[in-house]
Every structure is written in C-alpha cells, then in structure tokens.
Image 1 (cartoon, rainbow, N blue to C red):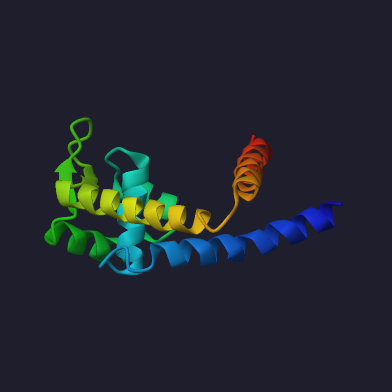
Image 2 (image 1 turned 120 degrees about the vertical axis):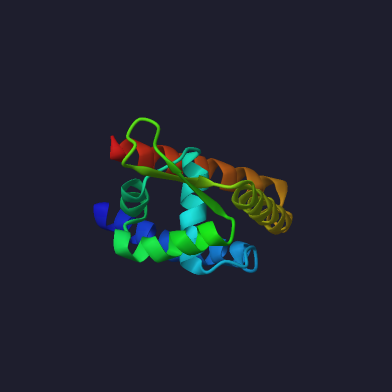
Amino acid sequence: MNQEIAKEYIALIPNLFESFSELNKGASELTHMQNHVIEYIYMQQKSLNLKEISSGLNVAKQQLTNIISELVSTGYLIKETDKKDKRAILISLSAKGTKTQEEKWKAIYQKFSENLSKLNEEDRRDLQFALHKVNLLLNKMED
C-alpha cells in the first residue's frame, strides 16, 4: 500500500506544479527568484532577516543578497534596522511589493475560478473534498 500511496503522491507533484505554473504565467514582471523572495515574505506576513529568508527558501544567503538589493532599489522591498537587535537588518514588503502580490494572487484566483467553471458541481465538490483531505493528511504526517 505504501508504494501505491508514494506513486500517487509523486504523480501529484508535477500535476500541481504544471497547474500552478499555468495560473501564474504572466502574473508578474519579476524574475523567478525575485518573485519567490517577494512571495515568501508576503506569505510570512512579517519582516524577516536574511537568514530567515535564506532558510525558508533554501537558497544561499550570498545568492539572495543581490536579489534583495535589486528588489529594494526597484521599490518592492524595504530594509530596516531591527529594533531589538541594532546589528540586524529586517526585510519587508513595501506598498509596491504588497500591491504586486495582491494583484498577482487576484489574477491567479480569477484564472483558477475560470478553470473550475469547466467542472460540474459534483466534480467541484469532489475536488474540494480531495484537496481538503490531502492537506489534512499531509499536515498530520508532519506532526
């Protein structure tokens, strides 16, 4: 049974990736890595230091330094001194960065809704249940 579950899980990954890639196509003028950085900070809903971003994205700090500098210079990110630790720098989204993410997710939601309209009511309910169950079970495996 474990082998069949693993097979389905592995088959799910490229399906989800392809589906999301299609929804995300053209949603941002940023490079792939710039988008990842902004998206990660947006999802965390707080200011982060370089180490937290590096760890969260599994990307070397050296690689992030130039990306973050460019995003600061183009107005997507803000660098501020940490009030708790004056030596540390916190990175957060600017109003422009937040707006970009909100518009991107709105466009993704719109495209996803259009795709859902291709399914009948029963298929949409099945999809909702299946996604809910997969998320629940994956979270349970993490504990």
